[in-house]
Length: 148
Image (spheres, rainbow, N blue to C red):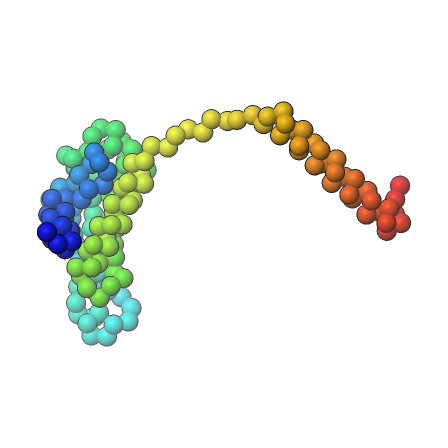
């Protein structure tokens, strides 16, 4: 099977966000409009800009924790758009990739940081460096003739 066929099968089966989350295609709403910017008549007439929206509240593919995390971090509707390319097909792929990345980033569980304490050796190095810097400045002042 070719890479293009793999992508087509992947798009037909839904949007794979994480190992545990596959969003079916019927939960994604698409909108196509004309792109702004240069491109002449093609850009003015062809609906190549792609925008994809995902309704978090209405989704049946999300678990309760996933839904809560997405609502807290992204809100009830998540969207992504692409108008980078002249091809609607390529802009669809880019919009899907951007939506996938936004959802994956929002679903990532952040491990709480455990505060650490500097080791006794690190404290000693810090104090030694402070003494060394103070000595260096004292010598500069003496060299200029402004010593105490």
